[in-house]
Image (cartoon, rainbow, N blue to C red; front, side, top):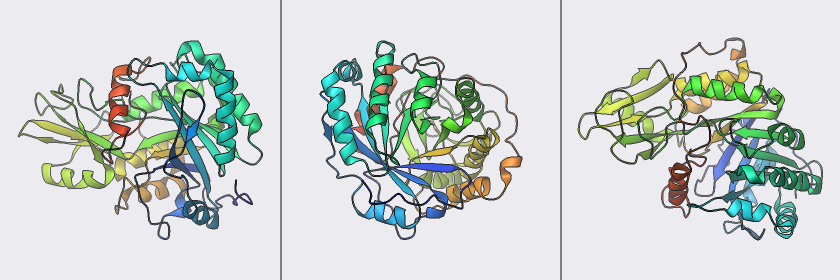
Length: 367
């Protein structure tokens, strides 16, 4: 727990949360602290017995020191994921002893706050999850904050959205993986109309001040049946980080998809196609968050932009240059792969790659 709470970042009119995975190194001296209010160290693990393991020693001493010097906060993310056919979350939530153990250990580890990332809470554990969140909130001394990583849509029956919004400081919406790594077709990871519809769905149940909208700093490249836009995939995709997407767009030709408001490229040999994010597509997403007057945005993940500056420029132009008065263009609705519950097999496939860490490219929250 920090000796004193960092002052709020004065320049930013909204909160900007950025997940920093343990496998990513950023230069703390040159980091754009003027554009990030909250860094979330990803992640410690919660076991089914409530034991919290933090093998990477997150967040360390350097990160809070640098963040606090610039008026930013540091949160510790604690994860609990269901494995293939698993029931880890239900098992944990069913045990009062496990919940109490986790609360005690999370409070001891918390820097400026705790972020819970449970993927995903089953419907039968809805009330137990709400109770656990309330128990943790009561145990966290002020001014420590509590935030939750949330599924992209409000159609998940394991979450009491109103109660969770009332209990926590913020719900961080994972608005990505609408087309996922092992999905049946290629397409944008975060199509703007789908994201807009998902955010508006949440706004029908909780206040805008409760929400921060997630944006992806990654995309996927899939082997496909043809080079036609959105062709069927013939195998699993590979992740393409924001930093490396530009070289691919330059080499194969940048195609702007008007429906999803994202760029993509096609490669005849294979064939294959990649759908990525660039400065233009990110700016539209940031502007959507501003136009809905949300509490802010969330980035998955810091470091994925490498030395590129386009993401920072998009963030700055959307949050510091008065562009909130110009909402993103209206785009036609498209199919949403996250309508209803996320396909468990797709989530599990992504998690198997993510844990243990073998590449630096996979997101969490895959649908």
